[in-house]
Length: 71
Image 1 (spheres, rainbow, N blue to C red):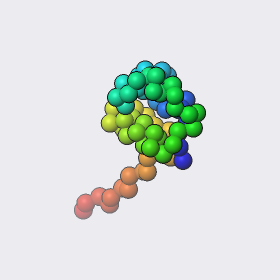
Image 2 (tube, helix red, strand yellow):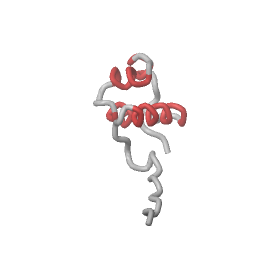
Image 3 (cartoon, rainbow, N blue to C red):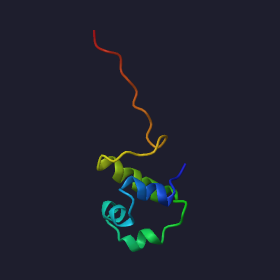
Image 4 (cartoon, one colour):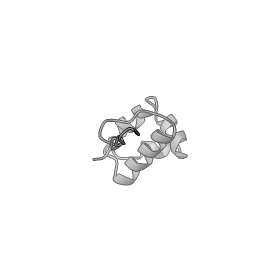
C-alpha cells in the first residue's frame, strides 16, 4: 500500500514546501512526484512523519503488541 502525493502533502500541513522541508528536498522535487507514490517515497514520508510526530493514515504503521502486565 502506497500513499498518494495528496496524502503525503496533507500529513505535513497541506503544502509541498512543508513536505519538502521534512524530507530535506525541494518543493520542486515534490511537484515532480507522481500522483501515486512508489514504495521508497511512501517509506520516506511515513518515516519523516513518525520522527516529527505527525499522524499517518491508518494501515501504515502496525499496531504495537501489548505485553501482559507484570504481577
